[in-house]
Amino acid sequence: MRRTMACAVLSALAVATAVAVPAAASGDFYTPPDEVPEAQGELIRTAPLDLAVSVDLGGAIAPLPATATRLLYSSLDETGEPVAVSGSYLEPEAPWLGSGDRPLVSFSVGTQGQGDACAPSKTLESGLVIDPEALAVGYEIPFIYGFLQQGIAVVVTDYVGLGTTDRLHSYVNRLDSGRAVLDAARAASALPGATVTADSPVGLYGYSQGGGAAASAAELAPAYAPELDVVGAYAGAPPADLVEVMKSADDTSLTGVIGWALNGLLQYHPEMAAALESEISEDGWETLERLSTACIGDAVIATGTAFASTSEWTTSGESLAAVAARIPAVQEAVGAQRIGGLTPTAPVRIVTGTQDDIVDHGQARQLALDWCASGADVSYVPVPQLVPSGGTGLNHLTPAITRSVQSTAWMVDRLRGLPAWSNCGLVRLLP
Image 1: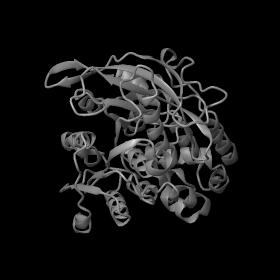
Image 2: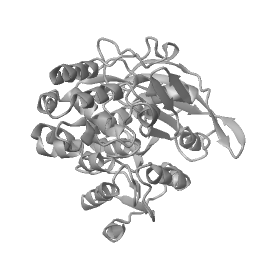
Image 3: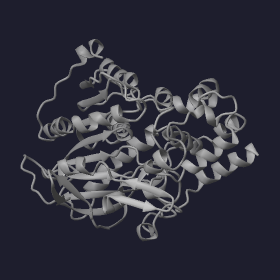
Image 4: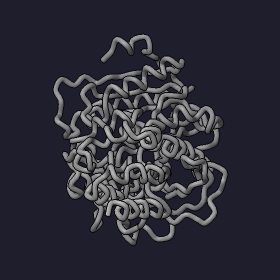
């Protein structure tokens, strides 16, 4: 029975279904061509994207001040194979009042889920996607608004497999996410009618899953996309060390993120399925399969994973982190997601809550130490949190909101060409 369940999950991972995608939003756009261009960041197809969402500005409702285009572009997956990635480009209505070409922010969203209905390009269209099997919310739209109103163009990747029908979303995969963020910027500059150019300054911005994607993109950029003028990267609450995050996210409202991470790894590492066959229980395999089409709303409300322990998914009663630590094939795949082994050449800012109850604070601080040691220009901002929030996610989410104005301003300064400051000399003295 375990073998049957493992095979069922692998089958679901090998060919991601569109069951959770509303018919009106899926169509043929999200189906990749048989041959994906080998050139990274090449536009495959585009389509108009209606922005039905608005932002509440102190009681006044304002539509997003932009014209949007749905994108399908080429990138490279973890194995080095071409992959089609969907996303969206937002051309601001406001002029850019700074000097030089209109800048671009490649915005990487926080956790959306693993089902195709969770794609940011779909929640940008409606704000809320309600499907019989998925509940997705575009909760970072206000942050995108902050750039658009200043005349800064924004491109938002859907990440590898989130939206497209050929595969499962490779959640928090270091190479997939970093490359998708950079190739989105390449695709935006090639979009007919866009006012950004190949010479536009590029900022990388993200929080939580998006913080990890922005961090990965920042350190990959010098070798992977040297032609991009990356001028800064903001990485909020980055899951830089998946080993530690598998521990901190367990027994919380977002235990499901561990399942999404494991599903993504199984897609690229089938040898893990054999190694885990007798380690994960039948209920565990069923849970992983259920998560594979779920969005963040479902993970909190409907999948039965909120405040669950991954020890309930294993035959030994150990947590998945403990199981991964003693199985070489799993340990290697999880460890390969570690961010911090390369050096960004653009200034980077890391923001992390000192009692983050989802994404371990210590590993985010370690990312700052790693980058500082390699000579990067790092601004490390620990947000003091006096009491824990009990796995509810409040301490994880709060810095995204309370520091949003400062974080946006920091990025705008980089796009304006202002110098950044580094506090690498103080990181070891800070919490």
